[in-house]
Length: 100
Image (cartoon, rainbow, N blue to C red):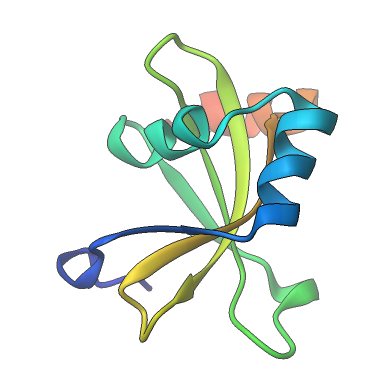
């Protein structure tokens, strides 16, 4: 799904960063931590992948907060472009704990 050796960083749209911070109280750095911690579950977002491939990531921050990140790949698939970040729902937490 993702060639992690090609990823060189993150890309944030100002509106998406503000929405994640204001609506969900998730900072950019906190959202990015999920990609460096195990376990990290990735699920294709088939419902919203019409113009670009979107992916859901379920994972933990350094402080153990369980987050759901929706992202796509930008800059020739070398950057993770976060679309939204928020706490996992109860259903997502259950799925994460079963699969992790």
